[in-house]
Image 1 (cartoon, rainbow, N blue to C red):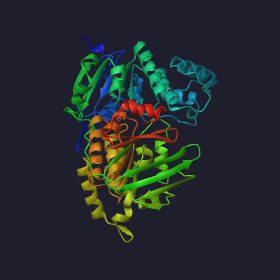
Image 2 (image 1 turned 135 degrees about the vertical axis):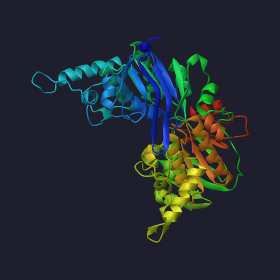
Image 3 (image 1 turned 45 degrees about the horizontal axis):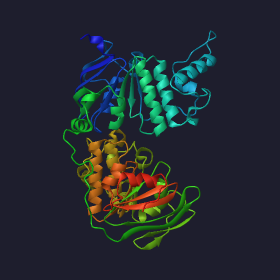
Image 4 (image 1 turned 90 degrees about the vertical axis):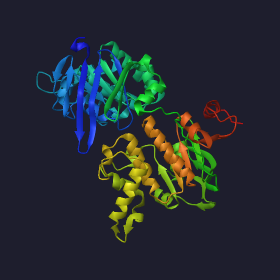
Length: 502
């Protein structure tokens, strides 16, 4: 086997941070014109591995080879010069700049007079974007296009530097179905050009559809690489979590109590059309529906984040007027938003600060914060939610997605809430972390709390809910009870597409 069989190879890599071994004995081998899937739980070391390959981190030990030649990356420019590019989950797009400016940033074409040759750059941008299936006006600001096109702009940058290998980090996490199909086509085209692709995803079905081989890592260590035909769902999950997950949805039942929350005829022009439902203490009420069905909007309206034109909200039988999130929190409602990074956390702050943010009053003595009480509460949350962090002072932005999600949950558990609204609680987190989120939901229900869960994953909704409400275009289409014949995916999808449930 010649050394240059691989376009990029990582051997015996180790990377440590104070108190944490992030990677140990890590391996990665990518062939030219192959799509290699990379999978592992949150906190398995995927992000650290990507940063080593792209020159952001320097490994303590180990070697990187590009086309059989040993390389040392002192910074991201070295990695890019060697032909390694990365399209990150959080896109690196300057939205106010044109498509051309984004594609050519730091790689400008200059004319004979030393000025930027925009004519040549626009032309080249148009060609590269067209080769990726996008007919766009390169002079328009990048922010005027949807996420799918913005992602193609990132890929165009990689094509332009003549990348030998492109890493795609969770590339489908914020794309619609049509955009995902387009991205998959693009990956196949890049593969046909001989470019190696590392495709990082939590979605097993994407790996089976797209990848030639899959590498599994766990707890910062290399576990296995096999051709896709030699994996199935169960063996991949077992390799990822180090155990078989016999029960992906560990549903436990609480004791159903009184009505915790009742809403009547919620109206919001063009968004909600007469939404009414009841949610009880000691149960999980699931909300299902297609994208744009109005589920998140319903929850935001109840929480006072969006303005209602009319409708009534009752908590524990008493009508309440909720005009702001502060009033909702006071009324005992907790809302875990879909966008944990933008709305759920302060990423620059520590784990400990984030855990008490929603209830600072409860941790203060007069005008001062009670640090001893905060420290105790932080320790309890980290232990009970199994948050992987060196300590409470670690910046939340440094944690993996699953652990960030647990911090958001901990923040709300540390309030006096009785009604917990979870909006897409497991989006972007892996199988093992999902089970831990479900266990938190089970704990809340057993404590007699009311849990409302919005999810686009049908198996999750059916696996964890006691009742499910299906919405479409701002209306409630029907309700399903767990112990009935129509509590299945077929009935749920029928209602979501507009058919009425019996």
